[in-house]
Image 1: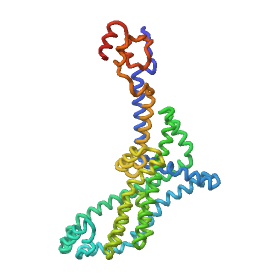
Image 2 (image 1 turned 135 degrees about the vertical axis):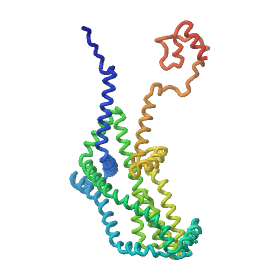
Image 3 (image 1 turned 60 degrees about the horizontal axis):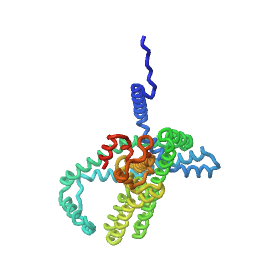
Image 4 (image 1 turned 180 degrees about the vertical axis):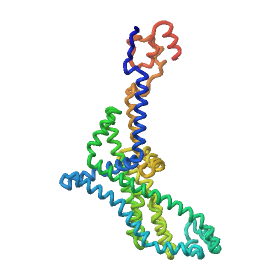
Length: 405
């Protein structure tokens, strides 16, 4: 009876292949099961990592009570959802009568001629006035026919957003729950992540985890500080031109900048209102402030992120912009994080290569060929010598040496 030959586990190709396939199936199945919770988990991780130092200070202020600090942070996160939601719902209910009246009058709506300030608008004034005159010359029925497709698009968009509002609320509540868990067990989660990273990358694991946390906090710092600067600039401009409710508009600008929408939706109507009320000078001044508040975001935020995480601007600019276009707001965190970790791993891999300490300006292999035969060959050749490939004896050595020349 022939003896059974058992291959070592490291050389059993079938076993290795099946192990990899099994691990792939388990990972894919786990991700599929966790798919509804992945957005909440990502957001919770970004929030907790960004606000962890503040939570520790709050815990120290509360006498070392972790439970009290977690409760306060959770309540703050809930207020970020329910306060704007309450204000939005109350505003809609207060303005419901006006909306109903406008809809009832829409079939008999007659557009008046454009005021003079429309023509005085810089760059687009004449074209806007011409379009306005063309619509004002239509009778109500023709105007309704013109506006109906746009109104339908607005209603469809509103219905889609209203349908997704429930999903948004559920995801936000899941984010709050996961954030509370991470606040309570943050140290244990960090230790597990470090162990996992060390298992994958060895000594580089701790460096990668530290870099990731620094990048997340730097992006959060860049977003908040930039929003503060934009809202402060907008507030100064609004107060300078004497716009009513300047404080409220500045608060709206801050919220829009945190949400990465920008100050334009809040400031452009203010500019139009100033032109409409016969103040073109103040309107132009606020227009300049509006453009500055919009543009400063693209300059200030990358600089703040670089200062907070000590990352190259070549990583921050594409990371922030590409991440925002790819994943939305959360891409602001994930984009620079991915590029930073990838760059670190690549640089470490290059630095750990054989011959990293070799001189940069090595002589050509044939540079010393005319100085005579090598002192030793074979096992006695100098490691790293570019001519070591010719360290053989006999005619073969001659042919290789001639080929190198």
